[in-house]
Length: 215
Image 1 (cartoon, rainbow, N blue to C red):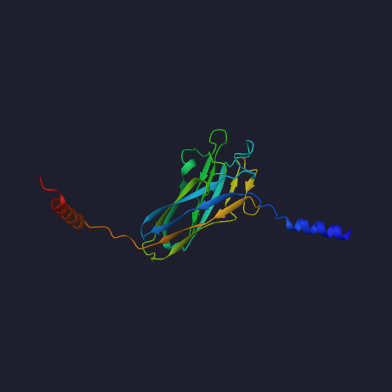
Image 2 (cartoon, rainbow, N blue to C red; image 1 turned 90 degrees about the vertical axis):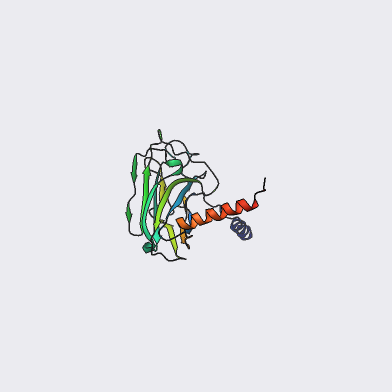
């Protein structure tokens, strides 16, 4: 009996635990951003089947609300930032919307009525999923080349919910995965002056005269 029980325990231990399915929020990465410029960083949500909320769930259990909080470090490298709807949520009309911010952090909170403004996610779409928002980030003119601005999703404040707010997907309950992003400050490409552009045009014209076949 004891041998049989030990064998059963061994077999159970050998079976890998099934990973819980989770929806995903992803912040994009921009690797070419010069000091003083403004860059757009996309934010995505991927709706995976088998989670508490999604298009595979009955009405009333769809992803119709989200709270997305992004912390950015170093804050001194960011002159200004806004967080707005984009992608599949851009044409929708939210029942509630807010974008609170504080030094080093910004959020986008939206609630949509399911009957009139169903968020059209692509169920089990390729990562990172559907774009739902965008961060408009202006890099500080004093930001040095090589600086990496980390864009980190707050694991406590970031969550997905149904319209009523009765069901939520969070990192804590295991139904939400977060993928962070970044902005890398690089050397700006120098712009040609008006004189340089005129000189370039004359050179190209002269080259064209030389290489064109004579009639």
